[in-house]
Length: 80
Image (cartoon, rainbow, N blue to C red):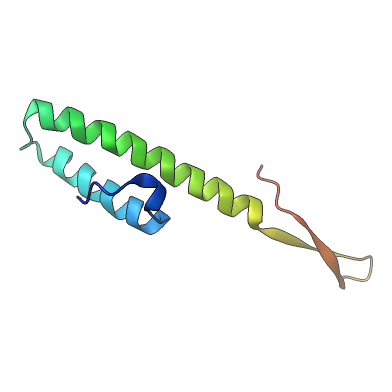
């Protein structure tokens, strides 16, 4: 666990740290106080990952096709 500032972390770095935290908590060998700290860090990492995914979704463009099935342009991605 790096404890690196979230604003400096990529999605992949945050996800890797989150996986480490989950593994430590699942092991059951963590003291109560440390498990609380780990849970708080995990929640922050989860929120960071969700924000990164949302940003990525907003950047995705869907190719639109004309009536002949030919590409005519792009439009913003809309999550369903």
